[in-house]
Length: 221
Image (cartoon, rainbow, N blue to C red; front, side, top):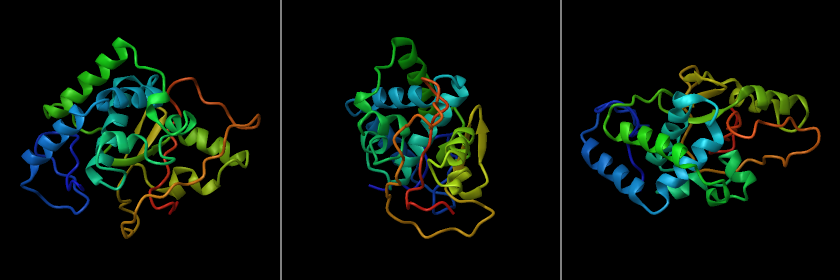
């Protein structure tokens, strides 16, 4: 299933990849409610959001949640939250945990309550998407350090010089299309090699400030 509108943001805000208004808001919201009701969906959201942005405040956590929901709406990373979170080589904490979000530390009751509150605000149309419809994000400082150490291509910094749609804490977010570049043809997700940590690899904090997500087509335009 490929949803045609992003589901984070003010009620009635449409940021579909095809552009233009849509009358499918109610069914899409029902789909989101169903997706979030799936076994483990909210726990998975909580674990990944905490792993990526626990030290980035509520705005940073909301930004990661919205990016995940935007990917679900896009459809290329899977038709469920479970599939989006476990999409191959997309969320670095999941990758380092063996490719399954269930191997990440369990969210504490306080952390789970924070994420549930943010998700509920999204469902109620009371939490605007702070990322501008982002599908990708990274910590450019960490990516630049890895590039300098020869661990990743220098072109991965800002995904090849893309213009961020938002900067929230340590993370920069990137919308589906860079307005400074012509739109690329859509393609199926592909994994991009992310090296295992080594003694020379800069170490990220235990929580947050990681967030290396590769482009779904493997490119770094």
